[in-house]
Image 1: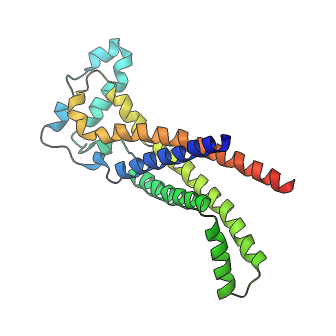
Image 2: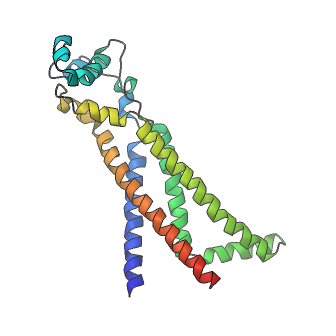
Length: 220
């Protein structure tokens, strides 16, 4: 049946989303750019230095020279002085989205828990069932809006930080990439975050589509 195929695809989508957001959460637990450079480490980052004379003739090297000068500046103690990754905010946002995904996943699989909670509320508090039902109907849209705000904030913090500038720096020919392998998690993070964002947007689109179909069926 077609709905079984759709269900399998949806479950796999959720699993992939969980996988990528957990990796984002794990990779942002500690910002490697906040570790101070070791002895002579800054010099080893560059295979050669770009001088002003070369930049005068080859203006496309200007950006690379700016990064070089910033990193080799005596006041620069760590890459975090140049590239701000906003790991702390992204880490918190990832945790909140994981909690929300768990909530939506188990809500979808175990809808009867809503009935149990409603009955419990009625047993403890003498309020009409219509009131408790209304509260839960309001809860879902509220949590969806809140999660959407968190998702947008996470994207803003991710791309509003210095991660793209760092990748621009890595593309410079004078950079010794081997000396930057200890920051590999930053590269993994960008890949995982992009995949999570795409899959999560697809998930939102599917959720909105199915909600509209459900609402249409209820009206008919």
